[in-house]
Figure 1 (cartoon, rainbow, N blue to C red):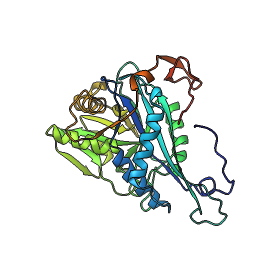
Figure 2: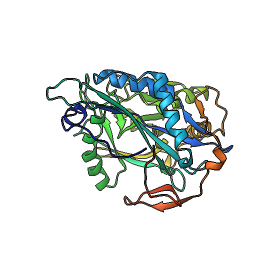
Figure 3: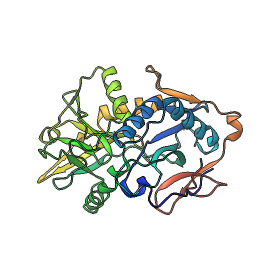
Figure 4: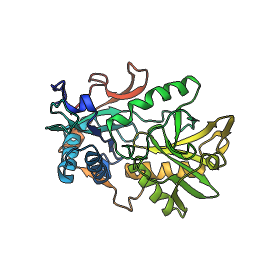
Length: 336
């Protein structure tokens, strides 16, 4: 059951940041089934991240079985179709105590879950990004390509600063030439010009997103050329439409980017046509509304699923964001 964890103050994860995590979602289809999306890809990335941080990889069968077990045990917390998801957070920590800078002697593999509401409440709305000339997300040879816990705290201050200026998120450039786009906050970046889709190439400083991979395939299925290459910010500012991808939002439209003295609006400040199409296709596949031609979706077997259904309502949590919680349960209580 979910609860606090006892850990040594000398744990590698606490002192040296030896920890990784994944982000996944379990969703309910219109037929009532509970499904997860491309868990094998999350397992592959989890293993690659572990190797980068000097930790033993979790075998794929163990990883996927554990995810399925957590989802099955918390099936009643999966919202109705279209009302949100059960967010799943697999973690691997260097939990053993160690004073020297070296891999921990013991490691802990843990998964917890939490019900969340829809990312876009009231429909998709374009976000505004500010290009950072001061901060960088990652450097060549670092851990930018791993889903390491240490990649996220350094982005909090830059994000807070741009939010005070009226932007939703920060757009990072490369740390060497300060001209090539890398990531939009913690999301992968895409832009479209004359029907061609562009996204920064995976050069070790960019996280290989599962949603990114899926969007690339779907864009090609639609007949679009997709180029994975270094994308100059000056080229981005001339694009027809832009969007970013990630587990939470799936596909988020970008309506505006500010870079220096330039402030450009894309697609008239509305959701771009390809952005909309890709979002509808991918979210449709994830909940069974669109044919899963690539066999990405995995069903989670849950005994007596119908009897586990609960009534859900929108409630306001302490951080003022809306999320889905069962009427009889505690607010923001994590299960699993």
